[in-house]
Amino acid sequence: MDFTITEDQATLTQGVRDYLAGVHTPELLRALDASDSRRSDAVWQGLTEMGLPGLLVPEAQDGLGLSLLDAVLIAAELGRAGVAEPLADTALVAAPLLAKAGGQDALLAAIAAGKAKVALQHPVNPWVADLDGASHILSVKDEALLLADHGGTAELLDSVDPLRRLYAPVAPTGTEVGSADTLLDHAALIASAQLVGIADAMLEQATDYAKNRSQFGQPIGSFQAIKHHLATAVVKIEFAKPVIQRAAVALQKNAASASVHVSHAKIAAADAAWAMSETAIQTHGAMGYTYEVDLHFWMKRAWALSSAWGDRAFHLARIDAAVIGGALPIGPGHSFA
View (tube, rainbow, N blue to C red):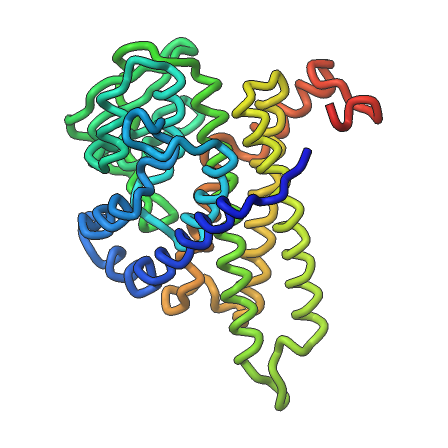
């Protein structure tokens, strides 16, 4: 399988990266953290004007009609910029599920226009993100995925990530639009992509610090102890990227092995993000977790997303069940099936 990024994908990704780098800065993150809502209408409007809510909305509903492979590339950029708005859940998870279900043209058009936000609720999570600002909610009941309008109140919960707005789950109601596993796989895939983008951002911050922080008359980045730790983290990050892309393609094609590939992606991405966060903390002289250092925003997001949509034990169990149970044949004859 050819995972070479096309020129169009590279152009789109770079455009999103440049835009977010200019508007979604550490200064903005600190301003959001100091606000009551942790959200900004101006930021959401900017994301909408960039066309990001409509990335996976079909062209017939005024979207761009892109694929899950495009989605994971953009999700990584959202992670890299530390985007706090619920763009990933609505645009990269809910939109393709609603498009696949059919009969949701009006809602898809509203998503593309930035006028609708969809919260995601699944039993694997003891919370629902950004439920307060959602116009709709996708929830699970008896293995079915239900869509309902939302406008009620909810109980706010605490989060290790100050910019994540988590709420207690609500009773699932609505119209059936899919399966619980479909929601889990799509959301876990997008979380994996964000984790890799977060890891890239932490790597950049740690590298910059290592270049500028001097000890014994030279930058600490010149010491092998720093180089080797950073190199180890880089390997984990780069090895996770094709795993995520494979999972995106498998899920796009509704492959029988898609769930296993998603679980592999979640484990690889979470491991890479954890390794990078530990390395970045140490590179910053063990001060990276403090509020004074910007790194803590990305580090806390990595911690939060690592356990979201199934933690390491959950996804290892899914892989174990598929391999040991025989649902996923292994060996040389099946490596490139």
